[in-house]
Length: 161
Image 1: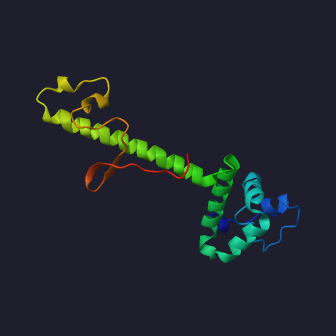
Image 2 (image 1 turned 135 degrees about the vertical axis):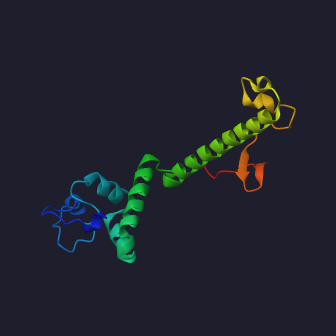
Image 3 (image 1 turned 30 degrees about the vertical axis):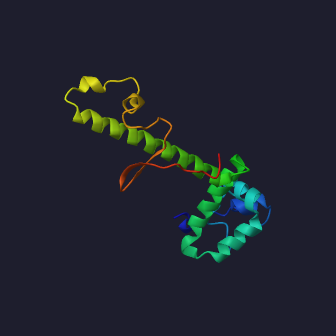
């Protein structure tokens, strides 16, 4: 854990950026080392040093490193995407997950269909969607969702593009 690392005599990244003397009781020093100036600069630009200090004072010491890691991630994402921030990144990952679930469901359905046939030559097609056209009433534009009940089609609305 980084907060247990002894500090050198130099100021922490927070104190350096704010051009103040770093004291031995500096709240930000264990989390913003002098060799990581960009880390604090991002957090400071998005949240402000005063707000970061207030947040860290309210969080138990055992959870402060996690809180700082969260603030750093949120600041990075907010600077990349000023409108959606980390929510945009999460939504993008969810979209990728849904697409991968769909691809997996199609592959499982094709495998199940091919394993029931006596000849595997009939399963060689150029597109996995050709197996479904007309036979099962499934179009390639349906969103598949795997749950405990098996393969179902559900349409998901995402709050962000």
